[in-house]
Image (cartoon, rainbow, N blue to C red; front, side, top):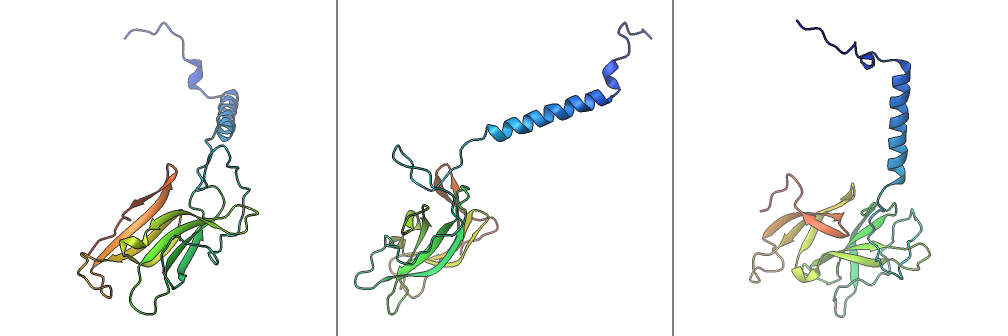
Length: 191
């Protein structure tokens, strides 16, 4: 067996100075990573005239909001609402399921995301997740962990009566890359 020309490696035995150097390096990495983070995404409009809104803790109230739904002589009503921070900016958004207040039948739903800047009189619609023109009815609606999930009932053709949707779909929306992206939740099955 040939003897090594290099003496025993000194760094194979840990000493307190090694632990101190490691702890110092780790603290420097943590401190640097907290300073060098990208800006958070928001559902608010951006541009040269847009100003960031201060953080609010009260979710927007959909009462009195003008939704982009055509109801003719009837009014739009909010059937369901849920709130949560969907875009990670620390401010809650409200998601509202809205339909026309028709006396009978199954009017389609619209699903809208609302935000409200601090000091603004009313919230505003920043996204449409389900357009009423798609003739869908929303059930099992939730906002949880930054995502909106819903079961959507629809029609396989225009010949199917409005009373009796024959298609069931599950949808999930999440804020990614400055937009709400729709996907199918894991474990969901369509009929």
